[in-house]
Length: 355
Image (tube, rainbow, N blue to C red; front, side, top):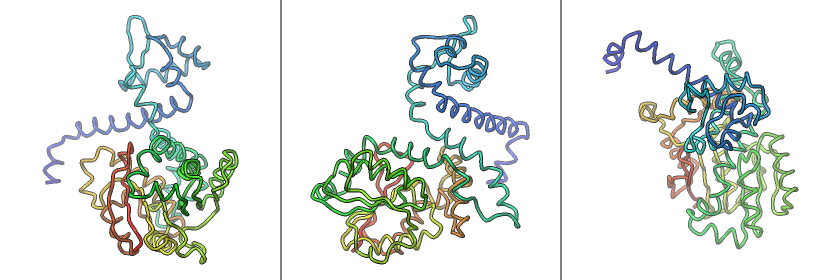
């Protein structure tokens, strides 16, 4: 079938398709610039069409750069353009989508390491790329996490887990494994003051940010520490009533060991929520997913090389729910359920229990 599909497509047709693909990459970077500079915010404030000079003046920016950026937005069919008046307008329904568009900024950040990743392909090249090559990544990831959980972690996500809200209100011990800047912990700790929360991550700067933010919020029920999840403290055995790992397991150098460590440190009858990327282990099962190229791209440019840098397995972003469930079973978790994550269609929630 693959040969038939190839022969049915002419070289000219493929060249056009490739041009469209490359153009989409430039559009994505331009969208990231629009988010980063605040241009989309300014466009959202405007009433009716405006010239490039008016838009630039309102944004306090150079007109020539704004005009070139607007040309990309118009030819990409993101903004409307009036040929006679030479004015630009962003329809309201597109503004709403752009407000929550985080992946363009992710592409901008990850494009900066494309050369590093290309070097890893060579037989005598480096095994992977260190976290230090992604200086802005934790901040971007924290923004995504905040967008995912700020309004629904307490109101929608927690209630999906039977009995968890009541236990958090009474007071339990929670581990946010691979917490990054600790956004879920900071939110939960503010709502459930009787519970105690421990956030761990390998990134020292992210942990320091979380600790500083916790102090700013006046939280006394949180603790953040730098920690390798594959080597949790020996005295943490059977310590936590609930463990949460949000988009963290597939990045680990040794995810099997990490899952066993999480199992060891979870109390009997304790719960583990592993939130990770929605996808399938078999490549062919992802062919109809329009987000698959983006997710495999994020894997190639970040998730896989950072794992391989530490001599890890390099699972990648699209390790898939089938492998995820299998690994949870191997770690001895039971009652594994695959649940949707409220308002986060790119994620799956693997809820399971330690017997």
